[in-house]
Length: 194
Image 1: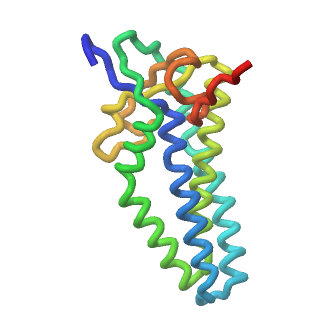
Image 2: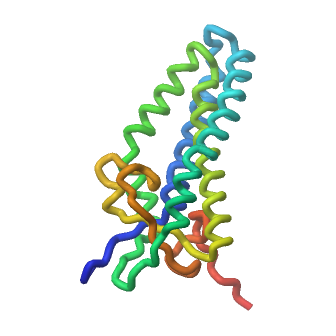
């Protein structure tokens, strides 16, 4: 970075980075958890897990949308000296910073199987599904506005991994062709050969 440029990471990529690990750790924990009869029995555990899955999905998917929308609406244009972080780097950095939290969440989900079989795992999977839905919502906004939304990398350090957390003062935006991720944070598909 030279002459005042900032390192920028895609907001949708950061949101989406936690979806896959939470989903798969949740599915694994639920699968293992259903093997244990638990204190309440499997039927009650699975029913409670289903309710927790739906609740977690809704809370994570809709939580904080107002802040995201406010920051996106007031985004300033990225400068020519700003450095756009690759999708793979953003995902790796997020997962590296949160690996211990993911491990603790997985162990907690396994531990709850002794009381409510599968419920903890389904809760974890619901959080992952909610993040996917939130990333998809961000992608729809990006397509509608025809602008990708970015956040400064230095505002994500030191445990402040949320792209809409208090340290974040604003977003930057670019055209939809910038970077290597499509709107919503998914991998950009290569152009079809004709």
